[in-house]
Amino acid sequence: DCASRRCVAGSQDGHPPKSRDHRRRTDPRSNGKRGGSRCATDRGYDSAHNQQDCHERDIGTVAIPQRGKKSEARITDERTPAFRRAQRWRAGGEGTISRLKRKYGLRRSRYRGYEAVATGIGLGIFAHNVRRWAQRQAS
Image 1 (cartoon, helix red, strand yellow):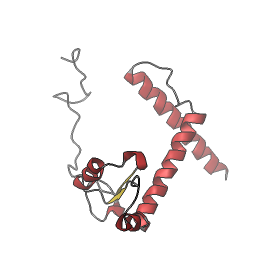
Image 2 (cartoon, one colour):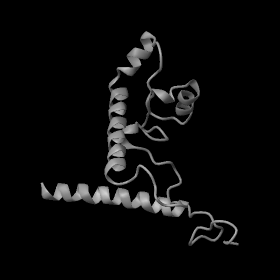
Image 3 (spheres, one colour):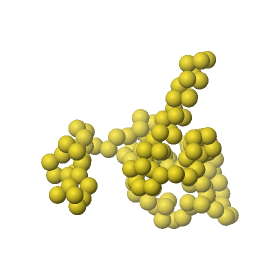
């Protein structure tokens, strides 16, 4: 009964169709590890639980800076090229989010309801991508 629950179009049982490849996709730079190549956050996410969760998920590079006083081993770990590369990647993503908020109206949604908000976000990101494409074509 589609009136009482959300159904996925084109499926028999209301669940999304399974992909052809049931294995988890990995990033080529992940050295074959499952779950992706990196997890990079800021210091606010540092906790033993978050560190353990990342290792249980078999994430290749866990780049969560430690809060407070650091041991020599931790300082050495945070100075590795993989850790620094992951933190630079995170910083680039933060810049993109900031631009989307400032220039494309994603600071606050004017819409109500999940579908409307998702559409507004999608249109903002689409406008950002079109502008980037146009700038690259011009140069």
